[in-house]
Image 1: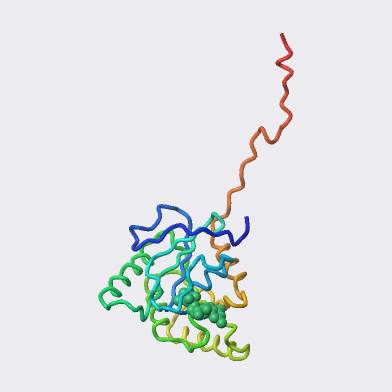
Image 2: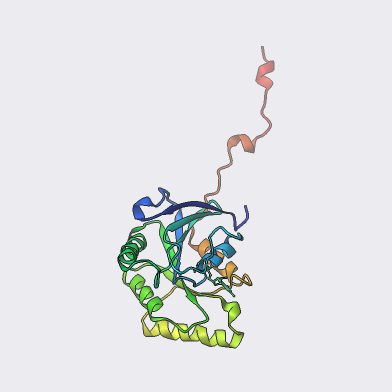
Length: 220
Ligand code: GDP
């Protein structure tokens, strides 16, 4: 099976609506417009598995994708300036927080940040919140094709300095570009390293001795 094999499973509005499955889950989260849908499409080698859109805050559901028949990629709604009413946004954040804190199958969160901009307070405080709840997470710098190599090095260092300042400990800092395809390999390898080892299928006795002896049939 291709390492990119992906199927859309369902959209849940809250924790109670999440699938009844024991598969490990890896979630993507970030501000609207950070490039989350594009990254999902890159990871799944699909043009429109996740709908990309320029409208901030449009995706408001917890979207589930089954990858390689082995794990779930969970697309969480963009936080920040969602274009919905304040009360709706608060309710919404409560539901996403509930998922992040209480979903046992959730193994890791990839927090997307746009590499074009310096570290933002909202991203750092979201990571600090995850840290408080002992949620395992990494930072993913998106759209790196838009930043020159030298500037990217400095930007990465800025992020690392900000993480230190905020006492944040992301497991990794990834760099990705949905445009050039950069960074997909390391993300997949990381996820792979967190998955339970696939059990080797027991060879059946039949497979070991394919030549069945029918001599007994000849006996009278
Ligand atoms: P989302 O709101 O986080 O799902 O963001 P989208 O994936 O819809 O992307 C927002 C905008 O950024 C779109 O115009 C994308 O084409 C653009 N974009 C996303 N990823 C990249 C990238 O890696 N490189 C470049 N150059 N543009 C990107």
